[in-house]
Length: 124
Length: 456
Image 1 (cartoon, each protein chain N blue to C red):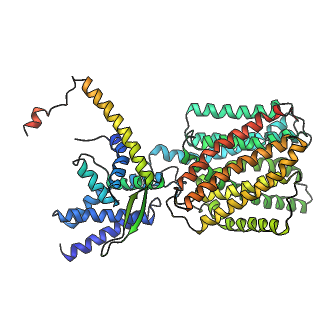
Image 2: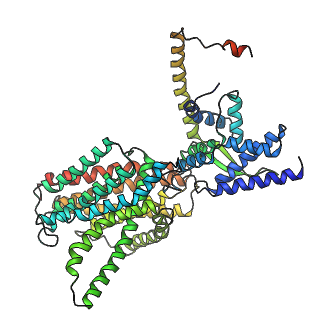
Image 3: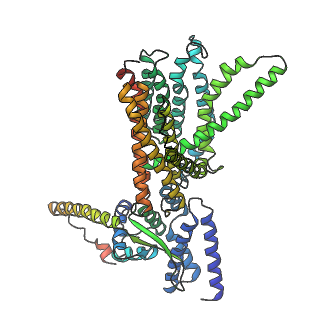
């Protein structure tokens, strides 16, 4: 399944903030976690995660520090701030409202059933 | 994996890194962060059984196209390169043709501005004689519409924005000329000072391509204003040298060039310089380092030291501030300078950097300016209650309060930033939002003051 660009962009901020709420992390690990959480269906262009992280940092939602683990490479770690947690809570409220509205739509328009896989695909 | 392919991989990564460094949008630390990502990806892929060169190719591919990447970085870090307003986007043929037309269009706009100031002369309004009041009121109406037109063309703004721009310029022209203001009245001086400010902000609307709600674009306009002023002063200095030589050389052969200079070279040159400076800022940005932030760095400590010395002197000698007529204006200008130093320090700051010594000096500067200004205001309130309000006093008092409010809240945000409580972006956000206040105030002085004070 391919998820459109707009949806990917809209969900990026809450995803990153949510992952960082679990504990500090760095770009590559965040990306891996997004991949796992979505079962590989959310596809991000790797590089574009970093401008997003920098934007969150500018807005004060996250803070960053370069750290060198013993015997490892220098790496930039990101940590969520109190303000970032508040933003995450706010985003969560908004998304809950959206999901609820969508659920209402799905149940009223019963005619549009989730499309079952076409025969030619099932046959493969 | 053999040693050979390891060396190969390092070579490939080094090449990739060099390629990244050629992009000015990407700072060294960004490249380092991306390289760490690339290496993590390669490690994972080779762990899954891929050969090093295959893993490298896939990792680079997944990173995304470098054009797209640097565009996103430039968008996020506009303070690094506000200059790249034409982001390294789709270089198509139409854009190339446009940039070739840039110079002729600029020359055309400059010529229009230069001729515009001569037009009233054809209707018998003499530049140097009794009609100086007319020129003082209207001086911004000769060059700024041409400048706005240039930006409107360059940014390809929509018809609606063009309509708004035209309406505002017409409003300015009406305000300057419809009121029956006497040549020696105070309100005419106020109009002459405030109309250029009001119209400059209108030019700002054209500069940001109609997108005036965007805080980052407004910050770009603040940056532009600083650079423009520097170019304008530089061109003015060059013009002074040119004038001196023109007078001197023609004088040597017995011809008097002063008439030509007074009625053509100075007025037309000044108007054209407005446009040329703007074009230079836009076109030559990548050639010269931004000047305003550099000057800010030099003068912030000096001004901070001066203001501190002034405060110490007041306390030491116990001298009150002598509240004369012009003292409010002097301290208004001081606040403008302090605000300018603050603005241009903000405009070039890396928003994610930690607070440093310079930020503390900046805070000292702002705080001492605030203390001095409060002392001046206290001293002057007595005078105003005694003598009543005149247009001049009201205007300078209003300006003082506007700047004081801005600086006081800036100081508060700054303090929060230094103590690590607030992100620096809050300060930037505050400054860009405050521009509305300037616009409202300038237009109020131009439109409402003559009515409020009975054209005094």
